Image (cartoon, rainbow, N blue to C red; front, side, top):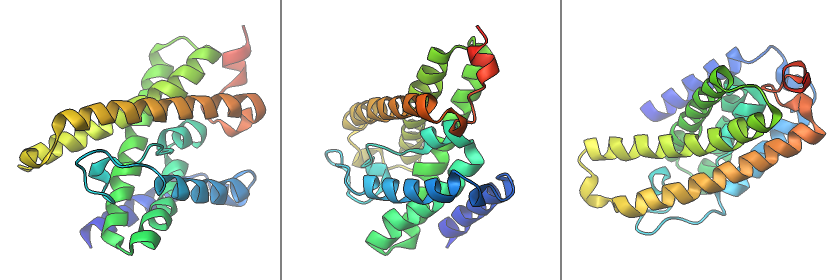
Length: 213
């Protein structure tokens, strides 16, 4: 119940922090359900890493989280609001375990969203504004770092809890790098497509700042 309570509290906080009536306005009226369904399916078709239990986040079974891309497009509050039903549709409906769904939300959604938002803020603050930097930084780098930092955080947490003997640390780190490259590549590619065809969907894009030159 603790995991569920924490997940619900974060979701409600994110939902309240989102702009008023944002989910009643286009494009989120139809885009949010589409993203939820797509990610719920994507989470369940990904392979697991060697030696890691299936159906658990700490097995790092997902090849595409989507948290970083949603953060770059809509900001962390909307991203966490969308990802909550993804976790319960993609995990609880399949496994029937609300605790596992809650842990997935906290570790697969909240942690990557936090680290992606932190990476984006650092990039926007210290790197000159350029469209290529926006795509590479907010798309690829932020997604890559969100996976690396989230996975490293969980690895350290498991080691501190005395579970290091149960882990293939070398395999974990190798798999983490592979997954991070996949996440970064997909997020960067999709963000570039959005900037070309639907730039108004990307909240971190400012046409005057990035195109004035």
